[in-house]
Image (cartoon, rainbow, N blue to C red; front, side):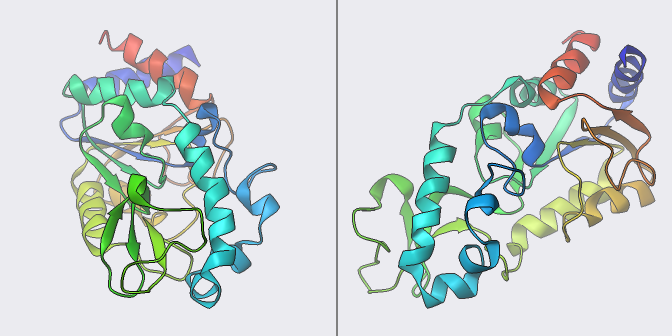
Length: 245
C-alpha cells in the first residue's frame, strides 16, 4: 500500500487541475454512518417513506421527525483527518476543488474553500411554497413541521429523492470533471446517478483516477488507475505526508 501512496503522490505532484469527489465514506470516521449501512438512517426509516420529496409534501411533520435525527447527527460531527488533508492539498495549490455528495459541511469546516455541494447542505432551509430562505439557527423546531410566515412548510436545503440536482452545482461539478487531470475519488462507490457519471466523464477526458476506498467499487475495475484500499482518514494524511506538504 505504501507503493500506491507513493505513486498517487507522484501523480498528484505533477497535476495541474486535480479535483476530489467525496461521498459518505469520508465522513464515517466523523461518526456519520453511511445512510445505507447498518445503523444508518435508512436502517431506521424507510427511504421511500421519509426521504422522498412526495412524502415530505404529503406529511412534512412526519418527515421532520427523521430530519431532526439527521440534524442532530450532522451538528454533532467534527471534521476528521481526511477532511483536513484535502484542505491541506487545496491550500498547497494541488487540489483545485471538491465535489461532495455529502450534506454535512465538514469540508468547509476543515478549511476547504472551493466545495461544490452536489446534494445541497443542512446549514440553511427554505420554504417549500414561497422559497424564502432561513438560516438553520433561526428555525423553531418545537412544533413540526416548522412553518414559513406564508404558512408553507420549511424544508432543508438538500436534495430529497425525486428531486433534481441544483442546476449550478451540477453544471460546476461536470465542468470540473471535464477539466481535471487527476480525480481523487474518496469514500464513494459512485453508483448513484448523476454523480456516478463524474469519474467516467473525467476518465473519458484523459484524467488519472485515484480511488480511496477500503472496498472495491464498481469503479475499481473499470476506470480506477490506482486503488488505495484504506479508510480515507489514514490514506489521505499519508498522501499529504508523501507529498511533503
